[in-house]
Image (cartoon, rainbow, N blue to C red):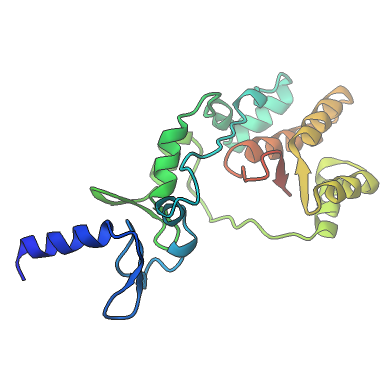
Length: 224
């Protein structure tokens, strides 16, 4: 089989709208991989739904850029700067390119933790994170523990200074170990007014990461 035959076969596989089976009885999707033994989650990935017409291809993009402001209180600002997370405030955008983000989402595969591009595979390194977000990437790895509602309530009481009843009401409202970003903003302002500045700084930091590196599909909440 010559090179032209291989290219022709590849073209036919990519443009065939009907999933077929290869010699190993593996499903091949239009525009997708011919061997899904590595990309096992491709069935539920965005590109497969795009090729089949289930989605229109444009993401709904939410940005919290306008919600983030540098703290005015000197003590709180010093804590934020010492945490190394201060640059996240400046690293957000009020306007984003939805088409560009949609394109990268389509080409990201969690099975390989990389983007599959025409030029090959590309992934995000810690050096990229440091260069783009200007936050520290050295030290021990941090794994976010999964908390239940009761554990989350206790942490909110201990670290943010709220009453147990207020913490319970918030996690009941969000139906899980989460708090609303608006709730954190109000808590921050109240703590600053009452001169509870350590609690205020912690509320600010949780709000900051909830708007940036820990943002999720809930749009309006962050996990404790």
